Length: 459
Image (tube, rainbow, N blue to C red; front, side, top):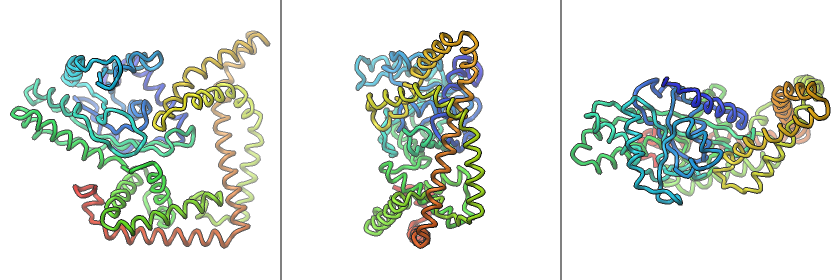
């Protein structure tokens, strides 16, 4: 089989890329070149967004990945076929009803054989998904697989263990969430491979601890999603105050990692000052929310001529596109509302919202389209059915873009009106932003560089 997988794998990967591109407003990958194109490899990632996590990595990494998934998923009528198409390996966990942990010996043999054949495994060593963007204690599976594969090959296999950090902002929000994949450098494993010959348990512990440390280094690890949102706001404020601040994904990811390490350090070293700074940022965020002003809009001057030209151009464009947008909304309204209703009825946990939405849409959208196509055929015969099929995708994509453009115009108009009516308020907010960035800079100077760089004292 090719490094990019067979037809079944490519089908699933293409489906994952299409669905995620539709669901999330922005997907970014940093460090994809660190995944070697060939040779045995284990890609280990944090787990906070249920089945979206493996979909995201399958979409982001060019070479074929064989995921390890809990055994009950293989019995799921919707998920099971996808797992079999990508050649996933079943993991039998003690906490899963109907699973037999004794079968994990066969799982371990399959994983070792895959590595010996030069394959790449995808594993989530936390053992389960949780919504908090913090790393939980790792299970030892990744280390045991690597060390056992090396031992079976005389230590000459050269398995790469690569950490991947997944960062989500609004992970369950359709067209409002964003996802970032940060792939780190491969871990050194030679000392653990050598130790495994004399003390396997110690070697497994050593490699598992090392993997946990490296995962924390590539993640943006926060105690909760509220902290992550405040961190994102601070990053926006920083880039507004410093025009030369780097804006590409890698630089933004590095800034967020250093900032969260500084915050964790200050929580221990200067807890009162850290808590006070957080309260100030929260009050600033609340002021923006109450005013209906985005952090990015605050930095704009809103010259009258520029505003009127922008409003005229966007308004005319939206007006001209309205008929096609209405067609797209009409064609997709039933499946959209059905999917939203199904997710509300199922009441998923926060880390499963996106998974439930994607799963429901996979079933309900084709079902609704089939009913609409049948109605078109009954009303107008083959001509109407052909027109429906031809209009379905382009009208839907157009309506999606039109809606986002309308929402952007609404935000800009609201911010402009607020700017006209409350010029002093905007100036005061800008001054508060500047003061907060200055305080953040002062606080950062009290944090050792070894902490900011992700050294052993970062936590």
